[in-house]
Length: 82
Image (cartoon, rainbow, N blue to C red; front, side, top):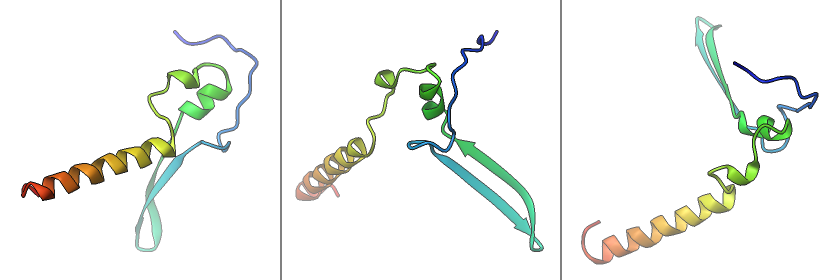
């Protein structure tokens, strides 16, 4: 199982890459840390993932969802449900 080397390179810190670091401190020292990073941007860079097939559209998709939620909330309030 696995992939053969393709000779492509990628940059984990490239535009669109996301990461999250969570650290726990005890007595002023790092007790443990967890790092999560978005793998999709790197996989796109090295040619293993087609961005057209990703189930996201970026910030505009989030804004549209917010507008839909606001309309739903307005309708619920008007009917006395909210």
